[in-house]
Image (cartoon, rainbow, N blue to C red; front, side, top):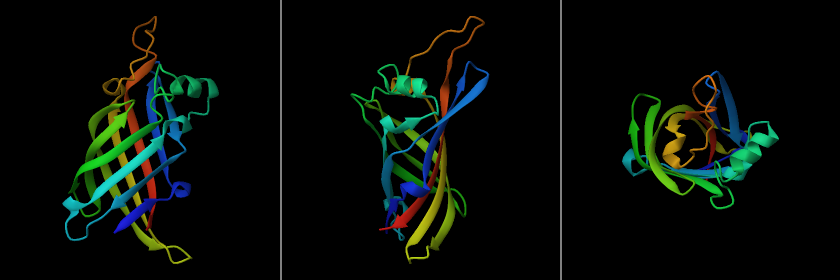
Length: 173
């Protein structure tokens, strides 16, 4: 069964520490992807997704421009992030662990998402829909996102750990 992300009912968000004392949140507004499920063998299933990095928003235009620059995502040379699963495991009745390769700024590293299945339902027009929630964390430096400024009192302006939260509504293709 093939499922396509419905971007109007999905979101990809992230959070990172700022000055070691506050959390800045942002999201990407342009993305797409598919989930292909083999109902007979979960191991033959797969997830593939892409993010238009220029669609980043933190509700602060100057910060967003800096994040798009070569200091961070370098969208001119690396306009898309990509994820492709390599392993799917059932961890509970409605939970899964999805491991795959995440590519940011031309650097590919493994990442594991903890996924919760929120269920399936038909919309008023007869389309079968499926909800999934996924979370993960990564060290931004592992992907070449190394820009930072030392703080006078110690520590750094931008935290290294980035938390990712994904809410997906999929439509059966």
